Length: 81
Image (cartoon, rainbow, N blue to C red; front, side, top):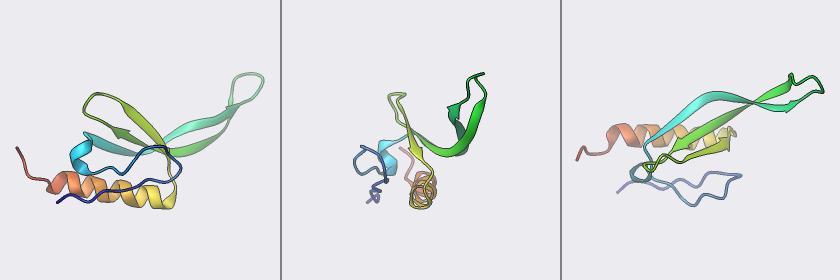
């Protein structure tokens, strides 16, 4: 039975490996832009990609990174159909 993970600071419900296609960590996005259009800083995010092609961006909080790593491991260990 796959484990469900409840990510923080998101509206997503609990997610298991059977609900997603993949998880991407180690990506960054601009926090904001100055008056010339240059980024004023960056923040790390986690991408969760679903089978229908939808992508959810989550903040890379320590707990979210832990859940993302566990989901990746569950994806690798799930039975092939």
